Image 1 (cartoon, one colour):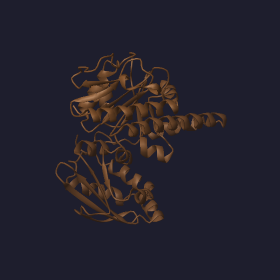
Image 2 (cartoon, rainbow, N blue to C red):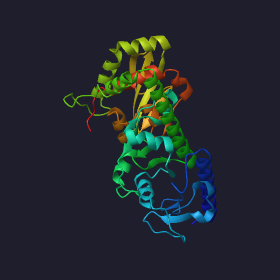
Image 3 (cartoon, rainbow, N blue to C red):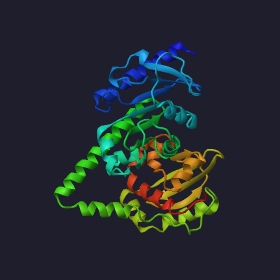
Image 4 (cartoon, rainbow, N blue to C red):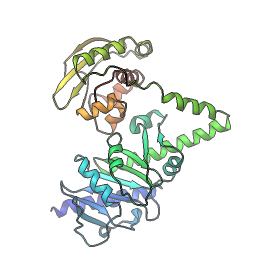
Length: 341
Protein backbone atom coordinates (compact mmCIF):
# COMPACT_ATOMS: atom_id res chain seq x y z
CA UNK A 1 0.00 0.00 0.00
CA UNK A 2 1.44 3.37 -1.05
CA UNK A 3 1.24 5.62 2.03
CA UNK A 4 2.10 8.72 -0.01
CA UNK A 5 -0.96 8.19 -2.23
CA UNK A 6 -3.14 7.67 0.85
CA UNK A 7 -1.99 10.97 2.35
CA UNK A 8 -2.66 12.84 -0.91
CA UNK A 9 -6.15 11.35 -1.22
CA UNK A 10 -6.96 12.18 2.41
CA UNK A 11 -5.95 15.82 1.88
CA UNK A 12 -8.21 16.00 -1.18
CA UNK A 13 -11.13 14.53 0.79
CA UNK A 14 -10.61 17.05 3.59
CA UNK A 15 -10.57 19.91 1.06
CA UNK A 16 -13.77 18.72 -0.64
CA UNK A 17 -15.50 18.28 2.71
CA UNK A 18 -14.64 21.86 3.63
CA UNK A 19 -15.87 23.09 0.23
CA UNK A 20 -19.21 21.28 0.64
CA UNK A 21 -19.57 22.87 4.08
CA UNK A 22 -18.70 26.38 2.92
CA UNK A 23 -21.19 26.17 0.04
CA UNK A 24 -24.01 24.98 2.37
CA UNK A 25 -24.08 21.59 0.69
CA UNK A 26 -23.32 19.72 3.94
CA UNK A 27 -24.73 20.27 7.42
CA UNK A 28 -24.21 18.95 10.96
CA UNK A 29 -22.85 15.36 10.91
CA UNK A 30 -24.60 14.39 7.68
CA UNK A 31 -23.03 12.94 4.53
CA UNK A 32 -19.93 10.96 3.67
CA UNK A 33 -17.03 11.03 1.22
CA UNK A 34 -14.97 8.25 -0.31
CA UNK A 35 -12.18 7.92 -2.85
CA UNK A 36 -10.50 4.96 -4.50
CA UNK A 37 -6.88 4.23 -3.54
CA UNK A 38 -6.39 1.25 -5.85
CA UNK A 39 -8.42 -1.63 -7.31
CA UNK A 40 -9.03 -3.21 -3.90
CA UNK A 41 -9.02 -0.32 -1.41
CA UNK A 42 -10.95 2.88 -0.76
CA UNK A 43 -10.83 5.64 1.84
CA UNK A 44 -14.17 6.48 3.48
CA UNK A 45 -15.13 8.99 6.15
CA UNK A 46 -15.91 7.67 9.61
CA UNK A 47 -19.33 7.68 11.24
CA UNK A 48 -20.51 10.88 12.95
CA UNK A 49 -17.94 13.18 11.37
CA UNK A 50 -18.49 16.76 10.25
CA UNK A 51 -17.51 17.08 6.59
CA UNK A 52 -16.47 20.70 7.13
CA UNK A 53 -14.04 19.83 9.92
CA UNK A 54 -12.46 16.58 8.78
CA UNK A 55 -8.99 15.55 9.85
CA UNK A 56 -6.95 12.57 8.66
CA UNK A 57 -8.03 10.34 11.56
CA UNK A 58 -11.66 10.77 10.38
CA UNK A 59 -10.85 9.00 7.10
CA UNK A 60 -10.51 5.21 7.27
CA UNK A 61 -8.97 2.70 4.89
CA UNK A 62 -11.23 -0.15 3.83
CA UNK A 63 -11.04 -3.07 1.43
CA UNK A 64 -13.84 -3.51 -1.09
CA UNK A 65 -14.77 -6.76 0.65
CA UNK A 66 -15.86 -4.58 3.58
CA UNK A 67 -12.93 -5.12 5.96
CA UNK A 68 -11.91 -1.88 7.72
CA UNK A 69 -8.12 -1.61 8.09
CA UNK A 70 -7.92 1.48 10.33
CA UNK A 71 -9.18 1.90 13.90
CA UNK A 72 -12.52 3.69 14.22
CA UNK A 73 -16.17 3.33 13.25
CA UNK A 74 -16.65 3.70 9.52
CA UNK A 75 -19.66 5.38 7.87
CA UNK A 76 -22.96 3.53 8.04
CA UNK A 77 -23.16 3.93 4.24
CA UNK A 78 -20.16 1.69 3.62
CA UNK A 79 -22.33 -0.77 1.68
CA UNK A 80 -23.38 1.92 -0.82
CA UNK A 81 -19.80 3.02 -1.48
CA UNK A 82 -18.50 -0.55 -1.77
CA UNK A 83 -21.11 -1.68 -4.27
CA UNK A 84 -20.79 1.42 -6.47
CA UNK A 85 -17.02 0.97 -6.76
CA UNK A 86 -17.47 -2.71 -7.58
CA UNK A 87 -20.05 -1.98 -10.29
CA UNK A 88 -18.15 0.96 -11.86
CA UNK A 89 -14.39 0.18 -11.91
CA UNK A 90 -13.57 3.51 -13.61
CA UNK A 91 -15.13 5.56 -10.81
CA UNK A 92 -12.60 7.13 -8.42
CA UNK A 93 -14.79 9.11 -6.00
CA UNK A 94 -18.26 9.26 -4.41
CA UNK A 95 -19.97 12.05 -2.47
CA UNK A 96 -23.14 11.66 -0.44
CA UNK A 97 -24.67 14.81 1.02
CA UNK A 98 -28.01 15.94 2.46
CA UNK A 99 -28.55 19.09 0.41
CA UNK A 100 -31.47 21.28 1.52
CA UNK A 101 -33.19 22.30 -1.73
CA UNK A 102 -32.73 18.97 -3.51
CA UNK A 103 -34.09 17.06 -0.54
CA UNK A 104 -37.08 19.39 -0.28
CA UNK A 105 -37.86 19.27 -4.01
CA UNK A 106 -37.67 15.49 -4.19
CA UNK A 107 -40.00 15.08 -1.23
CA UNK A 108 -42.68 16.28 -3.67
CA UNK A 109 -41.31 15.14 -7.05
CA UNK A 110 -39.72 11.98 -8.47
CA UNK A 111 -37.53 13.59 -11.14
CA UNK A 112 -36.07 16.88 -12.28
CA UNK A 113 -35.64 17.88 -15.92
CA UNK A 114 -33.62 21.13 -15.83
CA UNK A 115 -34.74 23.85 -18.23
CA UNK A 116 -31.61 26.01 -18.04
CA UNK A 117 -29.46 24.82 -20.96
CA UNK A 118 -26.16 24.48 -19.07
CA UNK A 119 -27.87 22.49 -16.29
CA UNK A 120 -29.59 20.27 -18.84
CA UNK A 121 -26.27 19.41 -20.48
CA UNK A 122 -24.51 18.80 -17.16
CA UNK A 123 -27.25 16.94 -15.30
CA UNK A 124 -29.82 15.56 -17.71
CA UNK A 125 -32.92 14.14 -16.06
CA UNK A 126 -32.22 13.46 -12.38
CA UNK A 127 -34.34 10.76 -10.77
CA UNK A 128 -35.19 9.84 -7.20
CA UNK A 129 -34.66 6.36 -5.77
CA UNK A 130 -37.14 5.40 -3.02
CA UNK A 131 -35.52 5.18 0.40
CA UNK A 132 -37.25 3.96 3.57
CA UNK A 133 -34.42 3.56 6.09
CA UNK A 134 -31.94 6.07 7.59
CA UNK A 135 -29.03 4.05 6.16
CA UNK A 136 -29.25 2.32 2.79
CA UNK A 137 -30.02 -1.40 3.01
CA UNK A 138 -30.88 -2.11 -0.65
CA UNK A 139 -28.12 -0.85 -2.93
CA UNK A 140 -29.23 -2.38 -6.24
CA UNK A 141 -31.79 0.34 -7.19
CA UNK A 142 -29.08 2.95 -6.56
CA UNK A 143 -26.56 1.13 -8.74
CA UNK A 144 -29.18 0.77 -11.51
CA UNK A 145 -30.01 4.49 -11.41
CA UNK A 146 -26.34 5.47 -11.55
CA UNK A 147 -25.98 3.60 -14.83
CA UNK A 148 -28.09 6.36 -16.40
CA UNK A 149 -26.78 9.39 -14.51
CA UNK A 150 -23.76 10.13 -12.31
CA UNK A 151 -25.94 11.99 -9.83
CA UNK A 152 -29.15 10.71 -8.24
CA UNK A 153 -31.35 11.54 -5.26
CA UNK A 154 -32.30 9.14 -2.47
CA UNK A 155 -35.85 10.17 -1.62
CA UNK A 156 -36.22 11.21 2.04
CA UNK A 157 -32.46 11.06 2.41
CA UNK A 158 -29.94 12.89 0.21
CA UNK A 159 -27.89 13.11 -2.96
CA UNK A 160 -25.30 10.66 -4.31
CA UNK A 161 -22.76 11.64 -6.98
CA UNK A 162 -19.95 9.58 -8.48
CA UNK A 163 -17.12 10.64 -10.78
CA UNK A 164 -13.53 10.31 -11.90
CA UNK A 165 -12.41 12.64 -9.11
CA UNK A 166 -13.84 14.35 -6.02
CA UNK A 167 -14.25 17.72 -7.71
CA UNK A 168 -16.36 16.16 -10.48
CA UNK A 169 -18.70 14.87 -7.77
CA UNK A 170 -18.79 18.25 -6.03
CA UNK A 171 -19.74 20.01 -9.29
CA UNK A 172 -22.61 17.59 -9.87
CA UNK A 173 -24.01 18.13 -6.37
CA UNK A 174 -23.61 21.90 -6.59
CA UNK A 175 -25.17 21.98 -10.08
CA UNK A 176 -28.14 19.90 -8.94
CA UNK A 177 -28.77 22.14 -5.93
CA UNK A 178 -28.65 25.23 -8.17
CA UNK A 179 -30.96 23.64 -10.76
CA UNK A 180 -33.49 22.77 -8.06
CA UNK A 181 -33.39 26.35 -6.74
CA UNK A 182 -34.07 27.70 -10.22
CA UNK A 183 -36.97 25.28 -10.69
CA UNK A 184 -38.46 26.16 -7.30
CA UNK A 185 -38.23 29.91 -7.87
CA UNK A 186 -39.64 29.49 -11.38
CA UNK A 187 -42.66 27.62 -10.00
CA UNK A 188 -43.23 30.33 -7.41
CA UNK A 189 -43.22 32.99 -10.13
CA UNK A 190 -45.59 30.91 -12.27
CA UNK A 191 -48.00 30.51 -9.36
CA UNK A 192 -47.83 34.26 -8.79
CA UNK A 193 -48.64 34.85 -12.43
CA UNK A 194 -51.42 32.24 -12.49
CA UNK A 195 -49.54 29.90 -14.84
CA UNK A 196 -49.24 26.74 -12.73
CA UNK A 197 -51.73 24.92 -14.96
CA UNK A 198 -49.49 25.64 -17.95
CA UNK A 199 -46.51 24.15 -16.10
CA UNK A 200 -48.43 20.96 -15.34
CA UNK A 201 -49.52 20.70 -18.98
CA UNK A 202 -45.93 21.05 -20.19
CA UNK A 203 -44.85 18.29 -17.81
CA UNK A 204 -47.62 16.04 -19.13
CA UNK A 205 -46.70 16.70 -22.75
CA UNK A 206 -43.01 16.01 -22.08
CA UNK A 207 -43.87 12.40 -21.17
CA UNK A 208 -45.69 11.78 -24.44
CA UNK A 209 -44.21 10.61 -27.69
CA UNK A 210 -42.27 7.61 -26.34
CA UNK A 211 -41.56 5.00 -28.99
CA UNK A 212 -44.27 2.35 -29.01
CA UNK A 213 -43.48 -1.25 -28.14
CA UNK A 214 -45.18 -2.37 -31.38
CA UNK A 215 -42.61 -0.58 -33.56
CA UNK A 216 -40.03 -2.60 -35.40
CA UNK A 217 -36.74 -2.74 -33.53
CA UNK A 218 -33.36 -2.74 -35.24
CA UNK A 219 -30.02 -4.27 -34.41
CA UNK A 220 -28.02 -1.35 -33.04
CA UNK A 221 -25.41 -0.01 -35.48
CA UNK A 222 -26.62 -2.33 -38.25
CA UNK A 223 -26.86 -0.86 -41.76
CA UNK A 224 -30.65 -1.08 -41.54
CA UNK A 225 -30.58 0.87 -38.27
CA UNK A 226 -28.38 3.60 -39.76
CA UNK A 227 -30.52 3.79 -42.91
CA UNK A 228 -33.65 4.35 -40.81
CA UNK A 229 -31.89 7.08 -38.81
CA UNK A 230 -30.94 8.89 -42.02
CA UNK A 231 -34.56 8.67 -43.28
CA UNK A 232 -35.91 10.07 -40.02
CA UNK A 233 -33.40 12.93 -39.94
CA UNK A 234 -33.86 14.01 -43.53
CA UNK A 235 -37.65 13.84 -43.37
CA UNK A 236 -37.95 16.14 -40.35
CA UNK A 237 -39.09 19.67 -41.19
CA UNK A 238 -38.22 21.01 -37.73
CA UNK A 239 -34.60 19.90 -38.11
CA UNK A 240 -34.46 21.29 -41.63
CA UNK A 241 -35.41 24.72 -40.29
CA UNK A 242 -32.93 24.55 -37.40
CA UNK A 243 -30.14 23.36 -39.69
CA UNK A 244 -30.69 26.20 -42.14
CA UNK A 245 -30.99 28.80 -39.39
CA UNK A 246 -27.69 27.74 -37.72
CA UNK A 247 -25.92 26.66 -40.95
CA UNK A 248 -25.17 23.26 -39.42
CA UNK A 249 -22.62 21.98 -41.91
CA UNK A 250 -20.13 19.50 -40.47
CA UNK A 251 -19.25 15.80 -40.23
CA UNK A 252 -20.30 13.83 -37.16
CA UNK A 253 -19.19 10.23 -36.59
CA UNK A 254 -20.24 7.65 -34.01
CA UNK A 255 -18.16 4.68 -32.89
CA UNK A 256 -19.00 1.49 -31.01
CA UNK A 257 -16.08 0.86 -28.66
CA UNK A 258 -16.27 -2.94 -28.54
CA UNK A 259 -16.00 -3.43 -32.31
CA UNK A 260 -14.46 -0.15 -33.48
CA UNK A 261 -17.38 0.15 -35.91
CA UNK A 262 -17.73 3.74 -37.18
CA UNK A 263 -20.48 5.53 -39.09
CA UNK A 264 -19.94 9.13 -40.18
CA UNK A 265 -22.69 11.54 -41.23
CA UNK A 266 -21.93 14.51 -43.47
CA UNK A 267 -24.40 17.30 -42.71
CA UNK A 268 -25.16 20.24 -44.96
CA UNK A 269 -27.43 22.79 -43.30
CA UNK A 270 -29.03 20.10 -41.17
CA UNK A 271 -29.49 17.40 -43.80
CA UNK A 272 -27.42 14.21 -44.10
CA UNK A 273 -25.93 14.17 -47.59
CA UNK A 274 -23.51 11.28 -47.15
CA UNK A 275 -22.88 8.35 -44.82
CA UNK A 276 -19.42 6.81 -44.55
CA UNK A 277 -16.97 5.27 -42.11
CA UNK A 278 -14.64 8.20 -41.48
CA UNK A 279 -13.12 8.03 -37.98
CA UNK A 280 -11.31 11.33 -38.69
CA UNK A 281 -14.56 13.27 -38.86
CA UNK A 282 -14.66 16.73 -37.26
CA UNK A 283 -16.64 15.28 -34.37
CA UNK A 284 -16.41 11.67 -33.20
CA UNK A 285 -18.57 10.29 -30.37
CA UNK A 286 -17.36 7.00 -28.87
CA UNK A 287 -19.05 4.82 -26.28
CA UNK A 288 -19.51 1.19 -25.25
CA UNK A 289 -22.59 -0.70 -26.39
CA UNK A 290 -24.43 -0.40 -23.06
CA UNK A 291 -24.15 3.40 -23.19
CA UNK A 292 -25.26 3.63 -26.83
CA UNK A 293 -28.19 1.34 -26.00
CA UNK A 294 -29.18 3.63 -23.10
CA UNK A 295 -28.99 6.64 -25.46
CA UNK A 296 -31.18 5.05 -28.12
CA UNK A 297 -33.66 3.90 -25.43
CA UNK A 298 -33.93 7.48 -24.07
CA UNK A 299 -32.36 6.59 -20.73
CA UNK A 300 -29.37 8.93 -21.20
CA UNK A 301 -29.13 12.28 -22.97
CA UNK A 302 -26.07 12.23 -25.30
CA UNK A 303 -24.93 15.70 -24.21
CA UNK A 304 -25.15 14.64 -20.55
CA UNK A 305 -23.35 11.37 -21.27
CA UNK A 306 -20.52 13.40 -22.81
CA UNK A 307 -20.18 15.87 -19.93
CA UNK A 308 -20.35 13.01 -17.40
CA UNK A 309 -17.69 11.10 -19.41
CA UNK A 310 -19.86 8.08 -20.20
CA UNK A 311 -19.26 8.97 -23.86
CA UNK A 312 -16.11 10.47 -25.34
CA UNK A 313 -16.29 13.38 -27.78
CA UNK A 314 -13.33 14.09 -30.03
CA UNK A 315 -13.67 17.59 -31.39
CA UNK A 316 -14.34 21.11 -30.20
CA UNK A 317 -17.22 20.94 -27.70
CA UNK A 318 -17.67 24.72 -27.85
CA UNK A 319 -18.08 24.54 -31.64
CA UNK A 320 -20.65 21.73 -31.58
CA UNK A 321 -22.50 23.56 -28.78
CA UNK A 322 -23.43 26.31 -31.26
CA UNK A 323 -25.58 23.63 -32.91
CA UNK A 324 -27.13 22.50 -29.64
CA UNK A 325 -30.71 22.97 -30.88
CA UNK A 326 -30.38 21.01 -34.16
CA UNK A 327 -28.16 18.36 -32.53
CA UNK A 328 -30.74 17.87 -29.77
CA UNK A 329 -33.39 17.38 -32.45
CA UNK A 330 -31.12 14.90 -34.27
CA UNK A 331 -30.72 12.83 -31.12
CA UNK A 332 -34.50 12.91 -30.57
CA UNK A 333 -34.98 11.54 -34.08
CA UNK A 334 -32.36 8.85 -33.54
CA UNK A 335 -34.28 7.72 -30.49
CA UNK A 336 -37.43 7.36 -32.55
CA UNK A 337 -35.76 4.42 -34.33
CA UNK A 338 -36.08 1.66 -31.68
CA UNK A 339 -33.20 -0.75 -31.13
CA UNK A 340 -33.26 -4.30 -29.86
CA UNK A 341 -32.59 -4.55 -26.14
